[in-house]
Image 1 (cartoon, rainbow, N blue to C red):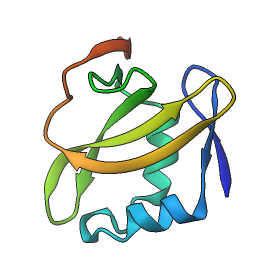
Image 2 (cartoon, rainbow, N blue to C red):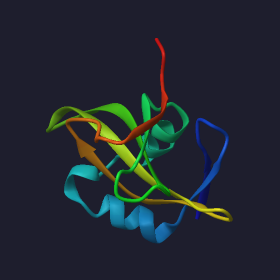
Image 3 (cartoon, rainbow, N blue to C red):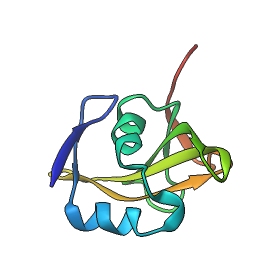
Length: 104
């Protein structure tokens, strides 16, 4: 298990089981270092429309076969625990309340 610090200061757990689940998807192979970077330096943090305790962290990611994408890391934020649920590549930021956005 790893504990990662995200952009707003929360400690986020990444269990070995969740990491294996994420990396089991062919398009996610090799993205393990990018998960931590996405939490630490996101371009957007969005509150999920389906569950207010889920936050979606986005950061641009250049995939060797799929091209330019966004890496989305989904984090469950509970009162006494914060942990990664999953991660995936996407073309766009999902709808939801923007909790944080990088200002360039």
